Image (cartoon, rainbow, N blue to C red):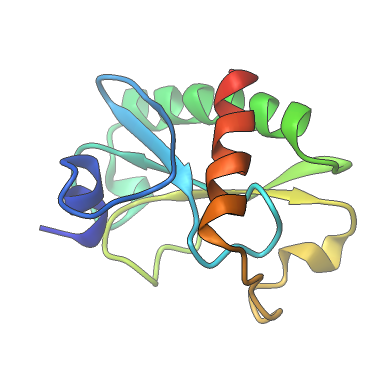
Length: 129
């Protein structure tokens, strides 16, 4: 069971944003920018493009709704989208609020946000869903 599957079933706490039958979204605990969110399928699959076509399409539609809520909640020009997939063996999409291209550089230092800040950001995004 991956760390993400353990988050889905509640074994590991998270700052949950949204959930439906197929997908789960939560704040990245090592965010690149405020509001950096991960979208994962509930189905455990290491590589995004091993998922069937309908699941990939549905995941993007789910991500689009979450991205719209992030954009209303965090000051940014756009929501950047990244799929790297090497960090955790469970497909995931990064939704990252950006103001410039360099905000998407995964080598940048990660933000250090307090649990209170994370809770407040998650609540604001949920409110805008």
